[in-house]
Length: 353
Image (cartoon, rainbow, N blue to C red):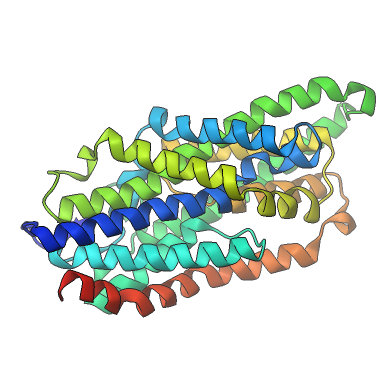
């Protein structure tokens, strides 16, 4: 998080209590992100019957845990610079933004609608920051510190990743069909084993991207409250805590979203599932290395649609589900922002404002 002055607030007992609550909300965001987004890594694996749900979720949980521990904090640094507020207001603003994102993630998960936790986080933080300190309290971007960042930069990155997910899958699917290597039931074994590898890669990439979002807001709050000297100094314990929260969310809540993506958008066979997973994993892995937070849900969903487009089976795509998801994506940012604004007075009260 960028701060509006070089001074940072000196932490006292009450501020520390609010900080602990806000960090708990960041972990709750990682948890809801797990049951909202992380299931995307295994949706096609389960839908094509390459793995049982319990086994697939266990694998995804392990890879989600390893991703942020091994890739680094590039995404966290980008997220930490979304809002620009006075140090004494930072914890309340971020806490409210996180609360709005958590509430929206929980609602869309309960309805079984794949939504974007990235959109929810950006919307929640922006809404709380604007109400707290005006429109200038948001780093709009699209370029921050020489790369895509701020609200506009993150949104542009999400759109580019979604387009790449569709385009790469379409190209790979057409190539597979041109080579005449469609999987039959007798040749399903090797394809399904390969699906395990691509699903693991996708889960690893998702963990690296999405757990880092929670790490980023925690780093911003620790910096603003004077606990660390730089947002890059966030400790390993916080990275591990966010990874574990994401992992638990994956293990407990994944099945609702698995059903929507793996079955209701397009009835996907094994080879197509492999193509979709490989494309999605490549896009998300690249974004994580570049420090760009993206929406796993949108990338995976667009790749599943890309499979249908590549096979020219537009009639088999569940366009009603796609439209429902599109509405959810368009409403996520304003909905999370409104929820954050509603709870912001509570965070002000907790902080003694």
